[in-house]
Amino acid sequence: MKNPREIALDAVMDITGNQQYTHRVLSQILKQHQSLEKQDRSFITRICEGTIERLITIDYIINQYSSIKTNKMKPLIRNLLRISVYQIKYMDQVPDSAVCNEAVKLAKKRGFQSLSGFVNGILRNIIRNPEKVSFPPEEKDPAGYLSLNYSMPDWIIKDWLKQYDVQTVKGILETTLRDKKTTIRCNLNKVSPDELKKMLENEGVSVEYGAYLSYAFRIENYNYLNALNAFNKGYFQVQDESSMLVGAVSGIKEGDVVIDVCAAPGGKSLHAAELLHSTGQVSSRDVSDYKVNFIVDNINRLGYTNITAKVQDALVLDEESIEKADVLLADLPCSGLGIIGKKPDIKYNVTKEKQKELVRLQRDILEVVHQYVKKGGTFIYSSCTINPEENIENVRWFMKQYHFKAESLNPYLPEILWSDTTKEGYLQLIPGIHQCDGFFIARLRREH
Ligand SMILES: C[S@@+](CC[C@H](N)C(=O)[O-])C[C@H]1O[C@@H](n2cnc3c(N)ncnc32)[C@H](O)[C@@H]1O
Image (cartoon, rainbow, N blue to C red):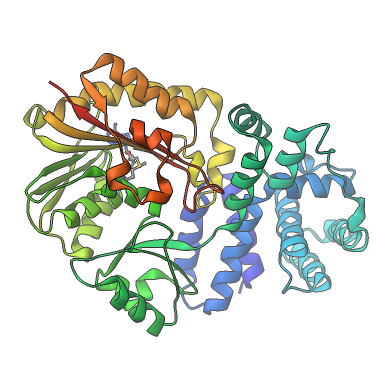
C-alpha cells in the first residue's frame, strides 16, 4: 500500500522521466486512488504541482549541498530529494524531521537501502544549515537571480527583461507562483451570479468575485469539480477571466453566426452560445475527435442548444464557411506563457525555436480562416501568451495582408482596462499588472 508521499513521488517520476503533463498525470493518479481523503488528495496535488513549478530552484538548492549533482543522481533519489526539499522549503504544515524520516523510509522501501544515508545526510544538512544557499546578486545578474529564485528558465527571463522593466517581470513571476484559485464563468442561461455564489458556498466552496466581469468568480476549497452539484447541473464553466473578455469584446448580437476555429475545450464557444440567448448558431471546431469530445461534454453539461461541435483542421479551408461568420473567434495554439501559473510544464517545454514555429502555424491558420468572416463582420484574434511575436506582431502582419481594420475595445471593456492600446483595438493582459492570466485580444472588422 502506498502512502500519499509515495504516490506523489511516482507522479513526479512520471512527469519528469516521461515528459508527461503534470495535470494529466495528476488526474490519472487521483482517479486510480479515488478512496483517498480530500486532505491526502490535496497533499499529493500540492507536492506534485509545487515540485514541478519550483524545479529549477529546488535543484539549485540540492546542488549546493551535494557533491553529486542532481543530473547525475539515480532518478528515484533525485525526485525523492526534490519532493522532500519542496516540503521543507515551501510547506510549513509538515515538520522537517518527518519529511526527512519519510524520505529515508521511502528510499529503503524502493530498493535504495545503500543510498538512504545519502538522502538523510543531504536533507539534514539542508534543514540544519539553510543559510548555506546563496543566489547570484540581483544587481549584478538580474536574470540569473530571478531565474533561480522564481524557477523560470533563464532565456525566458532575458526575453521578458527586453520587453518589461524588472518590477513588471517580478510581478509576472510572483503572480505565476502564487495564484492558484480556479476562475469560473456563471452560466447566466441557468442561474444568476448571486444564486450560483450561494449554491457554491452551501457546498462548502470559498467564493470570491472576479476582478472585471460580474459573472466571473474565483473559487477554492473544493475536492473535485465533478463532486459539486452546481458543476454537474451546468451552472458554471471553468474559464479564466481573460478568456471571458473575448466574449465580452466580441459584440455578439442575437441571431449572429459565430465560428470558433480552435475551440477545445470550448470556453469561448460556450460563452458565445450564451451571449446569443438561445438564438443564432455557434460552430465550434478543433483538430481531433479527442479534442472535440471535450467541447461536446461541456455543451451537454451546460445545456446550450445553439452550438454544435465538429472536427475541422483550421489549416484546411472549409468552403461552406466562406463569408458565413458574423463573428470569427481565432484563439490559436500558442506558447502559453500567460498560463504558466496553471500549467507549470509549459516553461520547461517551450523554446525560442518552438515559438517561431508557432508564429508560422498561427499565420498559416490566419491565411485560411479569415475567409470565413462576412464583409463587415468581426474577427477576434486571441492567445494565452505574452510573447509579442505571437500577438501584436501577428496582428500587424495580418492587417498588412488582408482588408481588416482594428477597432477600439473600449465600448466593451470595463473602464479599468482601458488604455492607449485598447483604443487601438488590442489588449495585452500581464499577470501581476492585471488580475488574470497573461492573455492577448485584438478586435478587427472586415472591410471588404
Ligand atoms: C488555446 S487552445 C483553445 C482554447 C479554447 N478556445 C477555449 O477557450 O477553451 C488552442 C486549440 O487549438 C487547437 N488546434 C491546434 N491546431 C489546430 C488546427 N490545425 N486546427 C484546429 N484546431 C487546432 C488545439 O487542439 C487547442 O485545443
